[in-house]
Length: 404
Image (cartoon, rainbow, N blue to C red; front, side, top):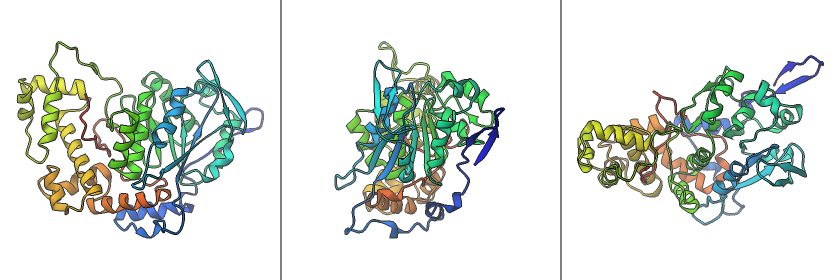
């Protein structure tokens, strides 16, 4: 906890999320995961109810209803193999029983206050355009700053759109990579110079702190968090129930020059569908270009305009995703998974999964089978560190449904 002395003698409290991190018992579990020694002893026994991963969503004045509803819609549609919910999502305000004005023509009654943070595993801050002091001076009013005193050490923090301003002002983003809506990126960087702002990406996963760009990128972030917590199969089911793409990679550009190709122009959809059916085979760039009767140069340019990434990056993402699916849902050996996902050898697959997810295949398989039996064990653990920054390796993988 640090304090900034004000002219009136009072202090603006600023919570340091890294303080007392060692006091969090879940830190040991994350360390075990990284070394491949994660234990299954934390799984719930059949005799007791399975704990839910609790997500607390902060509603501030002038909150945008769409962004406020994203966590409820996405996490509320995540179910385990037995059909039981995996998350509990609770909205709270700075004080209980508030009537909260929104950016729409209605207000919301917020029943809970910050006391619910005592049991929250994840705290999310969606976009809001108040308080004005935050966007003008980068300072939180005392009643909002005090909220973060209730956050337990080790709690995962996340923001959607301008919610990143709140996390930055509360001290959670100091020295970290982060993003926000591209329209606010310059002001975000000016107010919080220690934050490594990337205005280009959809979201940034920095382990126990995640930030997203605006509007639909908040959906991408939440689906990514489900995927990180419980694996690709659960995330894909959530996306299907919500009628959204199962995944857009965090490093994908916020703004693609031509996201919807003009009808008279050729697209790369056929090539992507063909590649998904041949992932277990070697695929060259010219093979994909031939599916669209394009030159390699034209195909590469068109592909990046439509998908937001290069063909090579996209292929690697699809193969990582195929490997994740097989590790979660089958008993194939590591060599067989490597072959079916197109990596050729187990060593190649290990290298790609280690770079993308932060753990080897055997640990990934064990981790997500454990998480599905004990949702409360996910906490702030991460299977990777997604910066989404140009030139770095993203720790996420695109789903087998190609972007278009």
